[in-house]
Length: 92
Image (cartoon, rainbow, N blue to C red):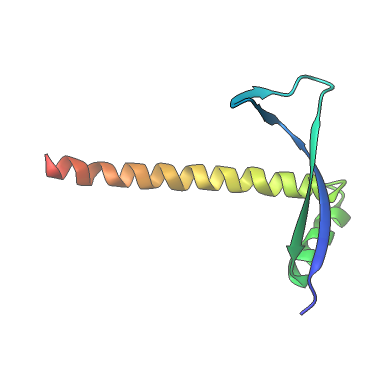
């Protein structure tokens, strides 16, 4: 099975410097290149997103996907935390 590789340039919204997080100021962008291996099906989906015109680059698609993943993970962690609360109350 062929795997497609992309080099993605992403603009970091947060930069870590000397163990302190701070927001990048306007005009100051930190970029990091990441290589991602995707399946042919994922490549077709990526191309469809680009072809739709909603996204202008692979980086935009990946940033949107990561934002969605972040929201899903936060919701999952909230669900886990709230479902654990009744069990702790039962112990008391």
